[in-house]
Amino acid sequence: MSTFGRSLDPTIPGPKGRPVIGVLPEFRRDPFESVRGWAREHGDVFNVPIPIWNLVMVNHPDLVNEVMNNREGRYSMIGPGEKPIEKLIGSALPMMEGDRFRQRRRMLTPMFGRKHLARIADTIVDEFTRRIDRWDHYADTGQTIDLQHEIAQVTLPGFLRAMYSTHLTDAQLAQVDVDMRLLMRTAAAAVFLANPPNPLPIPGTENLPLAALRLTRLVGTLVDERIARPTDDTDLLGLLVDSRYEDGTSLSRRDLRAELIALMGGGYETVVASLSHTLAHLCVNPEPAQRLYAEIDELDGATPALDDLSRLTWAKACFDEGQRLQGHPMNPRLAMRDSELGGFHIPRGTLVGTPVYTVHRDERWWAEPDNYDPTRFTDPSHPARPNNTFIPFGAGPHHCIGSGMAYMNAQFLLTLIFQRYRLETEPGWRPRHASTFSITLDGGLPVRISRIRKP
Image (tube, rainbow, N blue to C red; front, side):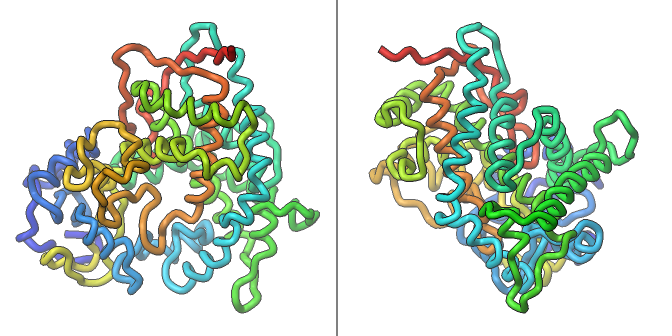
């Protein structure tokens, strides 16, 4: 029985599981391959018996479209939690639906269009360059570093500088990174049915309330300072402060804080995860990596600019293939009314998940799906695929608003890194998925780096 729905259609196939706990142990142990195995066994619509929720997975692209691209309010990302969350912390785009969601998205969309990206591209590249150049003291030492962690220390300050026109100290950046990951772990706990971070505000411990308080204070200070001292900077913060709904009203300070925190999480942490997967696969697949070096060499050492991105097609393909193999085990929606999927009745209150990891590795659409092969995105000889077989940024109305910025950042980062360094992992090392909200690498990305010697 779901929390506010009726019993699930007993004809929906799926693993049987155990009384009460269902298949929760298998799902928590390996949500990626367990769901993929159930899809192979039970088809495009299957029940995953777990406590509390009726959970149904759909992994055919047509069904994915029905769920994620529904514009009639049948499925929701936030469900009945929208109003309580608004009262508690404010409204941000990922936690909104209906007309309010559409108005907020129209308000934010210009901030992520090419015109605005052109304004901030040079700032982002400058910050990325300064941070990546710091890696030089690791180069040629034989020291193993966690490149996933290092990438976070590059992308976060780049994002903050370009979007909020602010510089934080290294200590402040480290604290923001820790606090943001605690918030992400809380969201991941809901998706992966795992234990959330410590909910008690005990000083000296990593806990959710203190992390949320620190982030709220930081962002609140940025908002208050900008309102008190407006600038000519055309950054995201200024645009948000100046934005108006159709009726002329502006965002409340609570909504401004909530939106900025949500954008911060989506704007840097997700890129850290997907770029880490991309670099990990390039480390263990030398042929695509060598082709990437060759493409980047055509810039002749010049710092990349926005106009170069259209030429860096292999870099984009490498990133797309990294995202494909990354894949989230479940992009959830909540059925807000009774409906039908694949001939099965879906009662109100059912949690309907799209297993992106499974869709991205479905043999019907991807030949040798476990192999890293960026030519899938460049070579027209690969068979055409239906829509919604590749959805790293989601689909439908909630498609990630910052996908253009994510691609720009990824191509810039790949270029700057591969202009300077060669990356090496231990023989036999292979990337493993971590059950985090953005699907990072389990154990990080341990590499040794060496400087590229120009002839």
